[in-house]
Length: 274
Image (cartoon, rainbow, N blue to C red; front, top):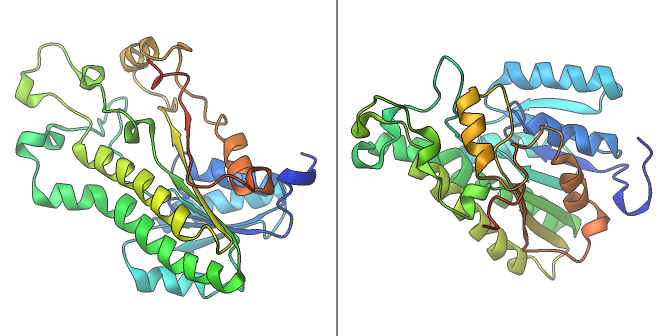
């Protein structure tokens, strides 16, 4: 893809957390296509090693660099950040998100508010909420030394509205045994938008822009009945395709959005409009 003007990221170094998941590699791909070098970080080393190899095979050696990190451990983050002379872009993408899957369900009745354990709560918010705080602090300090930088936090449409629990209902299952989208996910994603707004003002005169992106459900081999129910509450009538957030990521991380800070970009097929 030809790199031009405002969207050109040539020479930029980006760090992405949770880069071994579904959208993390796509965020990396988007930035690489416009010239950036991307550090893929994740708690699961095997995932980022594989994703980095795929990206380097496609775009050229050294464009993707895998690094293990625990975003809930400040020392772990510092060790990675100190390996690089500069970091121009941070994408806080790491989160714990129980998903609807075929066969092996990611969601379980353990996610119900009435019986949720403290351990479930803490694990649910740790990576997204605490990880966003710690990574923003460590990388933000490096950006302050550089005099500029961009932070993009990945929230969700469920950081703007509540989950519609009817999407997860199963026929013939007692109410107290039904799967639900957990409060941990909403709490963390709402908090990320709050942190985005706070940091955008805090860093406004220091050359660091902070925005967030809120996607809706991305199709990933979901059960047919779930896809149908979710598509019915989205005005465009379908879930997002996996590539449909790349443009927004490049926009938010490049000079094309040079006067934008503190904004939450919602891309959801119109789901939160009605």
